[in-house]
Image 1 (cartoon, one colour):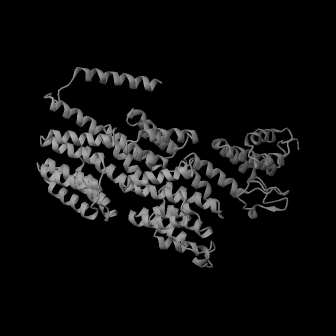
Image 2: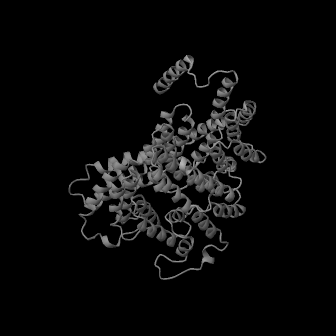
Image 3: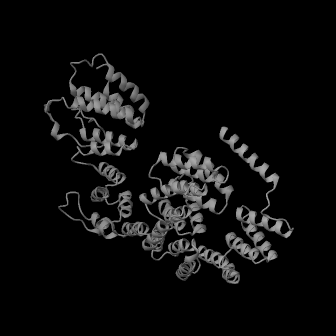
Length: 558
């Protein structure tokens, strides 16, 4: 043979896929490969070329090449060169055996076709290809689980995830997948003790003698069922055994962010970055927290670092969206949408898109984004986004249904109770009910500032300014928070206690110089104190708006 096949295999073993592809094109086009060449030889040559394309992520070309190979493979007589088509090797290492017999691994070829379809988001085609593979390896089962889950076939996904755990109990992505699909910790753990043949059982003590894996399963099930307090306790226990575990620290930070422990989550993410400065996992969640804290210097540095690591990841596009949010909302939205195109199951991308659309007064579109996040995995943020979107376009009934759904899913969550209160507070007839829900939230979690601020706003709307002040001043003892000072400033301004209002706006800006509500409130207050109508339109302001529009257009062109 003019082109030695073993050299292509050697190139691929060393990761030289460009050279393997080029040499493969010589192999399949050689004049010695004539019409009379055996179908098996043609199939082997095409599979080698397909493998090179597959590793280069040229998925369309790989699929086409593999299918040509299978066409020739189908023409091989049932008994050829002493090799039976029904007893092919099932090694997942390569599509063509390295032995002199050159046995073609049909299952592996179909797996790579399916993997290519999966990479192209063509789920149905991938499932169809894999259904003809009867004996599946571990990586084939995890692919089938993902394919079924992406298609909404949750029962099938659960079966394949469990099969993965029977083959290897340490497939943690299968544990997380089962937890998110509502499988109990007991049911997941029982899969560990079954062998793939289901004919024998092994002891859990053999698999997990120190019980850390069992605790991990329980923690993930707590996260999936919104039992966030239990999840944090279990993650804390695990972190005592594995104190610098980047994965556990990240999972803990994500839960802390969901329940509003923003300072703790930021510290946790900082620790993750100090241990592994090149990690990208959930760094977009960290970016969102920095934006909430108005820590734009650290946000800028984070995005710069992420871009230098890998500018093609969904997390990086969400972080870019967060960075651009206060500069140019349209650019921010385009980055959020790009994150979804890169990974259509990336929840922070949908959350970010929904928030931006809500700010742009496009609540119907925002609701679609939040619903997409909710369908992937419900959490407090998607519930909050949906409720506020429904309220923004007058769907009070739907907002109340969603808020109650959140409350039922998270019965011990003060934030879920506040969400129901927010819906009732949106109508004058529901304010008394809202008051009860806010107060219930504060009884459940006395330190929950969000409920206190909402209740103070309700007092203000009802003219109970004294109650609002006394409530908020109780929190001043334990909280150093700019939003608390802003709310107090607003209450004092409404009570015409302008000097007190001024001091609280100034306190808010000392804590957070970037607080926009404090800046606007202070500007308005200073006009009032000078006897100027704060609602009067200034010609210079109109000119400034025109200039800003011009600057935005220039930025887009650049």
